[in-house]
Length: 112
Length: 115
Image (cartoon, rainbow over all chains, first blue to last red; front, side):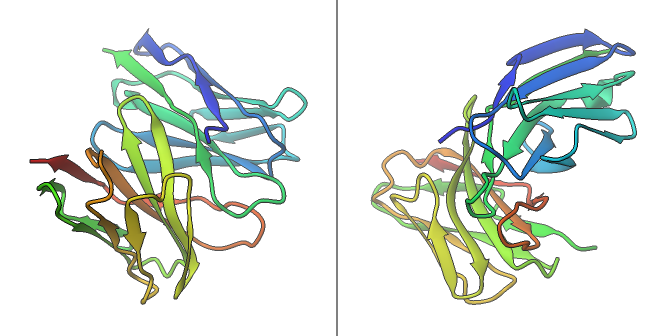
């Protein structure tokens, strides 16, 4: 079952521009997480935001969470060619186990 | 350095054959997970284990089996009953915090193909 759904499916920008990816989900959550995957590699955890938090920062990353709209956004500022990757959101479920449900991802291309 | 090691990186399966994918972690994590990734599909959970000698089915467990005899190891067997095994398989581990998710650490995957 796919809970999170990212939008857009693909995004192409120039180096130095900001990239925004969105995630929508269906059920109440404890946490929402964002991951990055370089081509042919495993996922790397970027940031976790709890359901009682509205915004979180980590370096050039900014994540927002709106539990009333069941949505989150990931903003990458001043993008670099090395940011080229797929980005996934993942959610757990209140009352559920500790497992995560991943969306299908946004494929970001940053052109030099 | 702590991490998760998956082997082999590439694996080929013949018709009617069972194959086993290895996953080892030295992060001292209690929980381990197996995911399948198809192109454009995101990750789907096959099996997960929250403690040694215990594991649960995920969303697509049919045709797969696992064991968790040691904390460090969570091998996945793709059986001949899995008719469409071609995919990228990812193993992950995390700490446990009952009732809520934790960040997961991933290996670099095994790509399985049918001969």
